[in-house]
Amino acid sequence: MNDERSQIPWSPTIRKADGPLYLAIADAIAADIADGRLADGMRLPPQRVLAEALGIDFTTVSRAYNEARHRGLVEGRVGQGTYVKARRARIARPVTSGIVDMSMNLPPLFDDEVLAAKLWADMAALQAEHGLDLLMRYQAPAGTVHNRAAGAAWLQPRLGAVPIERMLICPGAQGALLAALSSLAKAGEAICAESIAYPGLRALTAHLGITLLGVAIDDKGLIPEAFEELCSTHTLKALYCNPTLHNPTTATLPLERREAIVAIARRYGVPIIEDDAYGALPVAPPPALAALAPDLVYYIGGLAKCLSPALRIAYLVVPDSRSSVRIEGVIRATAGLASPLTAAIATRWIEDGTADAVLAAIRAETAARLEIAKSCLPRGTAATDPRAFHVWLRLPPPWTRGEFSGRLQAAGIAVVPSDAFAIGPAPEAVRLGLGAAATHEELRRSLLTIADLLGQSPAASSLVI
Image (cartoon, rainbow, N blue to C red):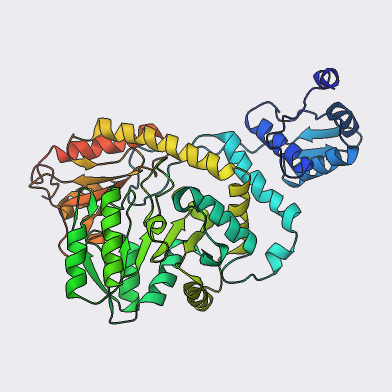
């Protein structure tokens, strides 16, 4: 068989051992087009020749070519054979003067055409797996057993084994947070969170009429003693926290604080909502709060920061089956259900290893961008973490957050001042998102612009006349 394969112009390298063989061949065509092994207009081997060379049935190759044709990768020419279809020109990332919108905390774009082709190929392959039912049928509000099992597998490194009955599929992390909050607190009741917290939480509590109280933090995150003091003086319906790569400060709670917070919450009967948006980014994070106290914690594992913001899928793990029934009712009432299409895409990416490859690419690109940030920003001003793609920039006096963000806005750079995060007095700081820049050079020029402004006084940099 090796001799036969060496005599034909192209033969696929099958990159996965599981799943239908015809899909693996179609995936190999996509990957080889992406990395240049298959050039535009190149003729593929005749189906029978390739089947004989691979030692497989002719119909398998025929199905693979049909699948590749359906994905727009190849085209059949009557009487001539099957040819690689001319690709659209690669869309160039916009070239600007280096000024970017750093207000959104996006995962950085990685430059891997093969992996990008695999992402699109997996989406196209859903038709063969699910047929029209995926597009034309409703699913249960909590998601299918298959999708929930995939979510449990994705979270296992952080949570251990998760019973399927405690897992729900939600329409994004914000949808999961809405479901958890709505099931735990009513209008007029109080919950607490870090004194610098995710703006989406502030928006939701205001919308629901829930009182939001701030818990003091330091450079290690939420302070357990401050949480206990609040528990002793208020009736709290929940604690919300973002313990790993905190947004916006990048702090990660050490294990001893996690254990202390769980003990306090248990003593006062306060459920915990753990927003683990960035928990997949560290290779070896401290144990999740949900791993320490699964009976107490509502755990939100979103995919926006570690896989794709476009999916709008998050996994919500609840303490028990009663909680699951209650929250399923909230999902039904507020959203109906999470998108079955994007849930199926997430499941496929998780099961075939694509999600792990994307996560590795995001980690590598994050590390590269953080090195750029460290080289550009003045030492001592930026709170960072090697695994976070955002920076918490503390402003030296006499700068105020309003003046600084206003001057940057005038220069075309958008950042988020601390007011968006503060529950109570806001510190003089802004958050920078490193993921939005199209290239390293654009990121570098933008950060140098920020560093130059930091080195000036507000009065010297004013353009008012």
